[in-house]
Amino acid sequence: MMLGQKLTPNNYYENWTDRAYMSPTVFKRFLACEAEALAELQGKWEPCMNSTALVVGNWLHSYFESEEAHAKFVDEHTEAISSRGPSKGHLKKDFKIAESMIEALSDDHDFDLLYQGDKEVIVTGEIDGYPWKGKIDCLNLKQGYFVDLKTTADIYKGYWNEESREREPFVYAYNYQLQMAVYQELIKQQFGVNCKPYIVAVSKQDPPDKQAIDLPEYRLTNAMNQVLESQQHIQDVIKGEAEPIQCGHCAYCRSTKKLESVVSADDLLLD
Ligand SMILES: [Zn+2]
Image 1 (cartoon, rainbow, N blue to C red):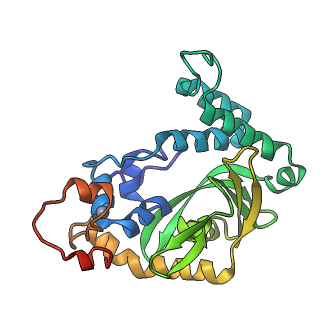
Image 2: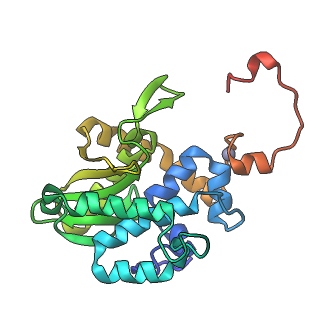
């Protein structure tokens, strides 16, 4: 751990920073599966994720960060350009969609009015004694709000929540309220301003849909309570003072699973 080293745009995503600072992304990973999140934090496991989706998301983010940031990002991601077939030399399909998502927002006057402020602002602070970090897409301290850009398949799609037995929007399915609540707190600590969070969602549909979204206060409060309730155990797991709980179903748990027990067919869906 390199505590005391300052977070910069260049080192923000380095693995040591995830051990020095909690972040909403890592915290949500622990909520999903402690065993997988811990293995990842220790560098023993690379999660299988859709890296194209990630690059597409960052493609869009870098565009709205600055011209310079986008040019650099595009330069570094030559995989976006088709290298064979009739499409050779042109953007691949996913990146054409990214371009139309960028257009959908950049052509929108109201988006332009809203997306004013400092871009990609790194914030740090402490929540209940533990250091946290965050990166704000767009922070407008003067008018007291911040904006997070989200790309999603379909803004109005419902996701089944097994726990609450309810369909919920993508915002809650991905626990973005937790990220927004933490960001709000870190901004307050660092700048002394209580900012209202907004999500600007843009869909991967053709043509893309878009929507500015705010979060009910009780959702932010509940999310912060979830952080406060779960944090100690998660930190104990990280420190090796508590056993990580396996979710039993994620890629990591499947990859480490042993056929050591027998389950009745009646109970297969009861987990
Ligand atoms: Zn798991």
